[in-house]
Image (cartoon, rainbow, N blue to C red):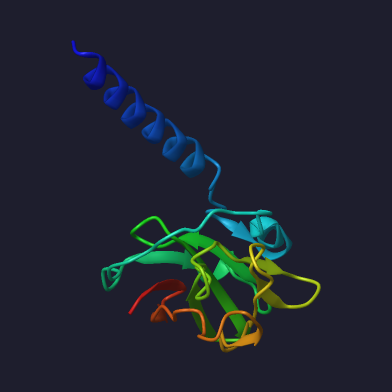
Length: 155
């Protein structure tokens, strides 16, 4: 093998290794509920991405998983972080866990009742997903959900 080919191959392998380590650092909190969802705020989390649409009718959780006033962390069908909430009895909301500023993974700050981005300090209102502190200017992406027979699914 030529020296140039060996050096090029080594650079590609090193780049893949760095990407793998970066992705491994971005764990999920699938299945977290209530106070445990506050741990969904990994310090310095790397940007994440989530695209595509959820399959209508796919179950996210049951109402037993989500008491009134709690937040349930889950993964959307594309593997991205997301949050399900029941702010009032029978009202179910879901938002992407991807910050609209720079794509980092947000977490739920239970003490402030806000979503918080550890990368640049953006904060989002839980009931609306709207930014309450910059640098984010756009709200968190809403995920359409419905509840039927005690099961919360994608709409």
